[in-house]
Image 1 (cartoon, rainbow, N blue to C red):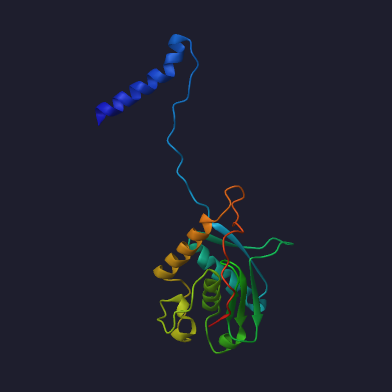
Image 2: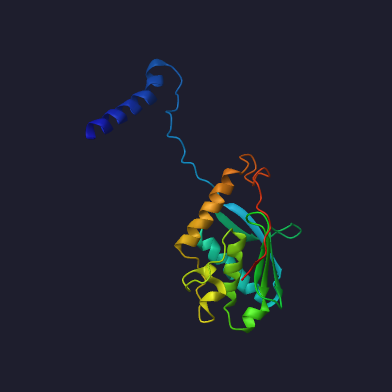
Length: 198
């Protein structure tokens, strides 16, 4: 190993000094290929209609941003159209997904009034927008078990399987990303919108 290091170092010194010795131009040594890093798909959300649940929505978003690498949720810029709209209403919490990473989330007061955790509701419904189905009945350790885990369940985090599924969902979506713009390519087929009521 030491002989290879010395040989490699000697070759590098000779390569750099040879132009000085023989009057030629220095040529940079070839560098290793840069490590290819795939960027997270950026999704914007508009929680301006989430009323008293705004902080719960922001916390649900932060949980997903902490939990996965292939997608990042950010508040929409003023005057821009969001991928995800979050609204408060008096019904039961639900999501109306569009294509992967887009749709509308309703934080329903009915479940909140029954004692369900608002941040868990937010993270759960955002999970639907990220491509996750309900897992009912299910244990509290599963975010997507939703209301079937009961009002005592306050687990707000996706489990390892749920995180992996979102990573897989968006890794496939990134394959359909335009190299020039980094945005999702319109040629990637969008799934049909389906109302998911928890």
